[in-house]
Length: 321
View 1: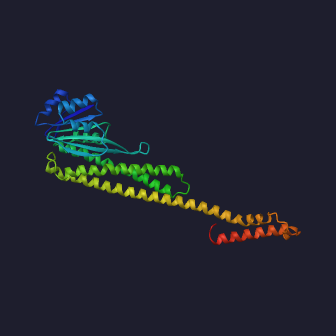
View 2 (view 1 turned 180 degrees about the horizontal axis):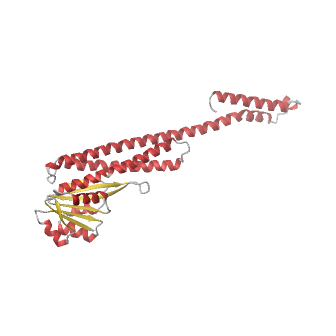
View 3 (view 1 turned 135 degrees about the vertical axis):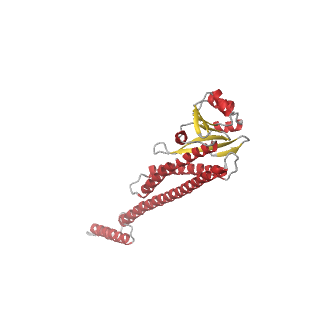
């Protein structure tokens, strides 16, 4: 679906133009054009990216091909950026949606394969206020995109705290807990993989390296960079906490295994006197005086009982029980 918005002197003056009207507006130096390709068809992609704006084939290829990492490329008449919006829920788990931007002096083209809250929020904001420049529009989009990282961080924090409690719980299901730990570890790894390159992309804009970002907007992009830096630090901290929880789980599992082995060893030690005495008097020697005594049976029972009790007392002093 193609959405288009035309701004004049910061105010929205028209929207959802026909293809020919888009070409005319794109050639008008006094107007600002934002075209949003929301879940577009192949035909719509070709009409807009090739037909109206005539973007470089490599940029179009990078746009339509999913990329796992954010990136930024400078072309002669525009700036191409790949960014990632994030989403998270306990049922759908961690997910990302790619948002591609073509930023020119008087136009902004956005491309995404799924609906994005950041785009919807930015659109609602600019229709109620003013949009002075494509770089300002791009900042608004990126600002909302970064803001939407915080709910994801809150959800991941809640799941991490729940995992930490389960690690210390005595009745936790081990296999389920291991699967959850590995799943959350994958979420954190993917988050760190996205946040760091995205921070580098925004850092390049914040330094004023691009001619498509006006100097007046550099402090705003620096603020975005700082927000991403804080998110990266938080993600690193969460990952370290998760690794600590995993180490605690492994130590706990090893301790429980040792306790089981300790109990079996103690049980073997307690039964050892009975096994030794039974084995001794079970031998078929011809001359064994105890066997011929009328009290031999009671002697063997008493010896077994006393030696077993002595073994129990010894193990208790060693705190094996």
